[in-house]
Image (tube, rainbow, N blue to C red; front, side):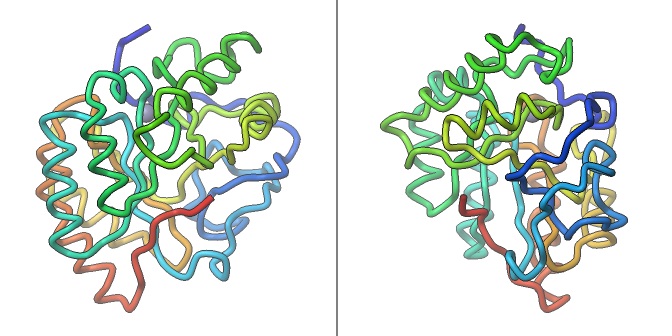
Length: 238
Ligand SMILES: [Zn+2]
């Protein structure tokens, strides 16, 4: 399925046993923890483990927006993490190479970005294939990925185990300005991010999957605002 729109994470909730290896952001029980992570008891990323804030960009690479996002990140000397969709990586390999060359972390965001049914509701074989092909699409373009972000944030113990078998850690987020929503302005994106970030936050934004002009326009103020709070911007490393 190639319908490319980020689904609200909470719609994708399939929630049971705590996954043993997991990035959520902010620490367990944080108010900013996304609905799809609440109550998992997951080994959340503790602020001590991430001395700063991680900006993450999903659904690219996009020839329209990824170069612009990279330009801003380079201009402000800001490391970040890109969760790329496998078939886009095959379409635009130079953009993935550019991300890696710029010192960004590149993670697996599945091959086809299936949205419906939610990722965790796919068959085991489909989940395995999506994760593996997404990872394989990055071969030769970026260092082997260590992080997997399921489409829509939809995870289950099976998704976590499947990712783990391939050496990938499921990575969610703790701050979601819903930059993908129609009509959202760059000012709203800035306000939502700066109103929520704290040490250990993982912020989800998008450099692909639709018109990301507002996200690009919001980035300089987001970076400056986070630094003004005394927080460091970091790329996620495994
Ligand atoms: Zn996505």
